[in-house]
Amino acid sequence: MAVAVLAASALTLSLPAVAAAGARARPAAAPTPTLRWSACAGAPGFRCASLPVPRSYAHPKAGSIHLAVAELPATGPHAQGDIVLNPGGPGASGVDFLEQQGRSFPAALRRSFTLVSFDPRGVERSDPVRCGGAAGIRRLLAVNPAPVTPAEVHQVVTATKAFDAACAAHTSHALLENVGTKVTAADLDRLRVALGQAKLDYLGFSYGTYLGELYAQAYPSHVRAIVLDGVVDPATSTAASDLVQAEGFERDLHDFFAWCPTNRACKAELGGNAKAAYGTLFGRLARGSVLTASLKPRYGGTQHVNLGVAEVGLAASLYSKQTWPYLAQALAGGLHGDGSLLAALAYNYAGLQQNGTYSNMVAANAAISCVDRPSPASLTAIERLSRKMAKAAPDFGASEAWSNLACLYWPVRPQGRVAPIHASGAPT
Image 1: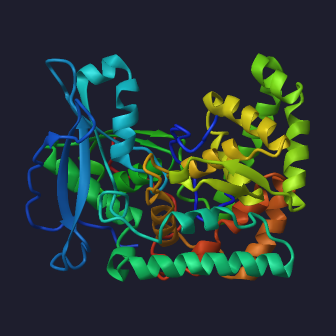
Image 2 (image 1 turned 180 degrees about the horizontal axis):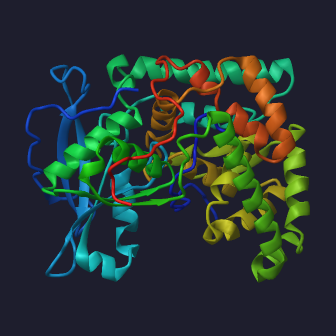
């Protein structure tokens, strides 16, 4: 996406800011400790625990990481076991997802299964990757999502290098080397054992499907059932995957255009022509216009909204039809110079919390993505890819290509590779 490190994840929009509107990873030989459950702070009915795992499975004596785990107990008297959930990202908090969405799962499922989730290593409560504070996140969101001129490219490169340097300064190299999905798959198996389950039941969304695929590949005999929603193809190159995502956003945007005339509120706000409203607003922003956002003081107060922030807000609103009304309101406001809702959508997507701080989702997303798979190896390659993808997906292609820039300067080399996963020996 426009921000150089965001990828698709399960999304919950509360919009708090608007003022007025390789080698197969193996668990360590040491016994996995039992989870000690206690009530989750601020989440009645949920239980929380901590699971220690080796920082490095290759060097198990080099210290531990403590994974935050949460569960929503089954409602029925004869529960069949646990289903472990991952909401995607990479970088999304599984604990937050469970606490926010757990009770929305089907009642029949909740009668039979306890729902469990966790913050993967490097995420939020589990030894988080850190890349600076709220101001740094806002600066990163504001970069030009698709630079063209040498001056624009220089500005984006400078901002991205500063972000990467902040990550290296605030996070140990040992952690950055050990946040890849293969390692998290080993953590998932330790969690299975700690839960007392002979075999794993797992539900992964978006990026969470990649975790499930790697788990099935590494531990096929430990699988009972795995459900993958929004599957990541492990055999698809980074460039091809970026194009798929750009084309997906493109389809969603045009579906929104078609939906707007059928919705009374959207039709009234945008005159029945959402495509024209979008074209007018984003055309102005692409030419350098800036909107004003009036946010609550703890969310930064008065902000300037440029093309970068607006495009992140646009993408955030496209994941679900439930958020399309927000997009209609945001476009209508933007046409009148008010970028408050676009800013709120963008900042919420990047992990803005009620207290004005940001979760570490953006930082974790970069750390995991850059380690997991190779990205374009030079600035020239990214520029060439952006031109190619802009032809296939005019609204989102170039910015998806530029989303690889953070990995170009990342302090840890990629460890994963692009290859098919067969999971031989796992259930059909």
